[in-house]
Structures are given as C-alpha cells and as structure tokens.
Length: 112
Image 1: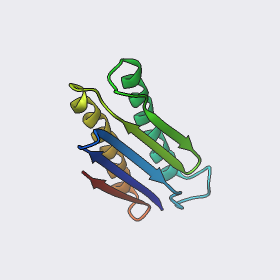
Image 2: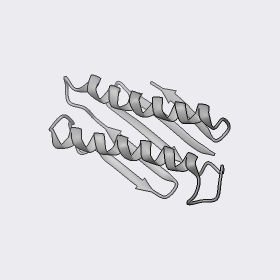
Image 3: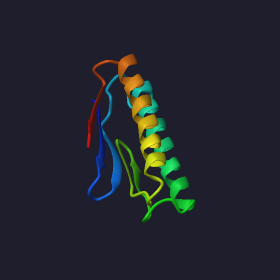
Image 4: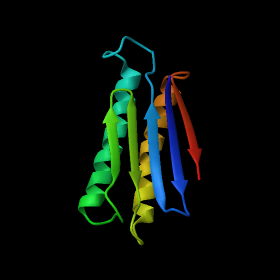
C-alpha cells in the first residue's frame, strides 16, 4: 500500500508531503497506481523547485525522490503561502482521485 501524509506546520512555516511504499496492485514496474502516485509526487517536486527558483521560498526546497519514497517540503516566504498551499492541494486532490479509482491501494492523511 502507498501511504501519503500531507502536513502543514504553521508555527515553523512549512508544508510537506511524504509518500512511502508500493501499491501492490500489479507487478513492480507495471503498477498503474504506483505510476500515478509517482507522477503526482514528481509534479509537486517540480513545482516546489520552480517556487525555489523564483525566490518564493525562505530556503531551498527539500526534495527526495527514490524508489518507493518521495518527500517534498517547502518553507514559503511571506506572501507566497497561498501559492504553496495551492500546489499541495492540487497534489493531494490528484492522489485522492487515484485512491478513489483504486480503493485499498493508497492511504492518505492530512494534518495541520
């Protein structure tokens, strides 16, 4: 199962998404659930990188993309929190749609 956790820490000013595991829907390398989740994680990572390059983050985005694990964390500058929230909302929406299409293969948690 793919486990995904979205977090926003208002005190420390960061947003984060961590994705871990393999769906087990099909053979590794041919699993559409893992492929979909991976594309969404890579898209979020690329958007975080774009925010970084545009100077909209307080520090470099933390991005880890490795077989079976993805971690994306950003600390937006003042005035760019809504943009960062929107990016993470889009990622979470995509993953929730994937979870609806393949029930029992993705678990999603959201927290503030």
